Length: 170
Image 1 (spheres, rainbow, N blue to C red):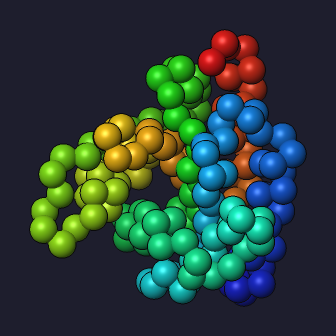
Image 2: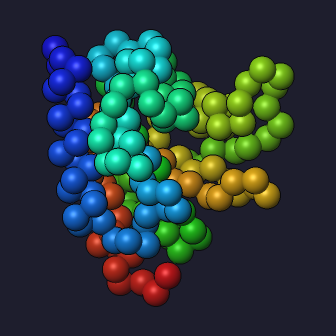
């Protein structure tokens, strides 16, 4: 079983790889948001996230990443890591056959449910995809969430996506 320190270290190592190797066109304004949850996570304090302002990792610091991961974990407990990268139509075209892409619809959410929570939940009903994107609204930019078992797999998928977009003119 991984300790909190193990989870934090794995996230820090993956974040460093992404920072060094990811195509800058994948980095949204404010940086890539990324998290890794403890096995059996049930609360935001069980989710470690990268602090984009300092590049440090901390538990309980990114409510959005925590909500996303806790929703995913309810459907598939082994998928405990996610990262948000910039998303454009061109980037979506670069998703390879190795990733099952599903779009998170952002319909009017039921009262008491956040739009992202509702969108992610709707994408996970028939199995959790490797990537989910939220549809652009007037309030938020389009974000592509890469989902995997651990941060090392997240880093691998982001680097793979970086290689695909290096051949395009975004």
